[in-house]
Image 1 (cartoon, helix red, strand yellow):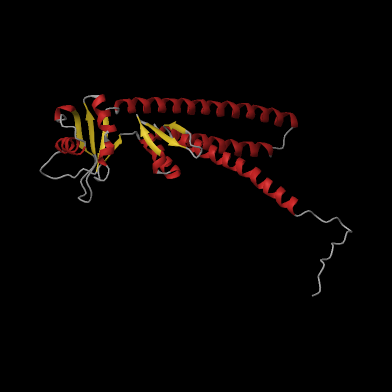
Image 2: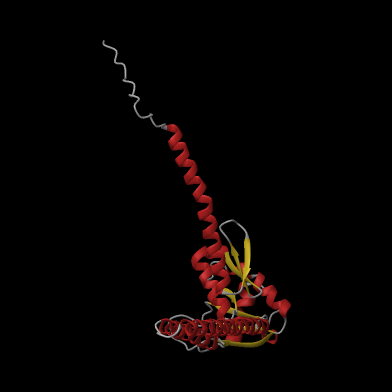
Length: 255
């Protein structure tokens, strides 16, 4: 889907470039004014039609992409990623998961029966343990484990939701701008605490950028009156002396 959107964007850029060249050449044609006017009008109509067509296609692609992302995220609602769980040749991912849940979270009735699918991501590098993808058989159990993750503080083990690529990119972009403590995920959505203290729920990088831009605009609008007030205060504190009026000399008292 991303490749398709990129293709459409590239096609739109090429079409606009060729239209610009065509319009430039059209203006250089030495013919009767009526012919040039007619061609220019036809070109404008054609340009408007093509642009609107590509815009509609782009909107349809974005809508389709959102629907596919939502569908994919719903299929991951029972999944959690376990980070920092040590791996060895003697154990498997399911056993490691059960051990973490039982020993670190004190949920002792948890077993491999409660796991629908479990595996480590990627190839082993031997440097750090690979994340474990765990799909639970029950959503309520998944949520219970998710909300018990505070017990992992100081253990080097963390949990995260298994986000789609678009939502993961949005989350990382939000963390870079707003900080780790003001961004988290909940049910597949990215929660952001803005500079005004308000919470925003987003799923795409574009929505994160909209929040960043809107808060930057608000900050500029708030700081501008402050500068004006400071300038007014400065001007009132030091009034100008009218032209032609000599400044009054200071009096010195002789001792």
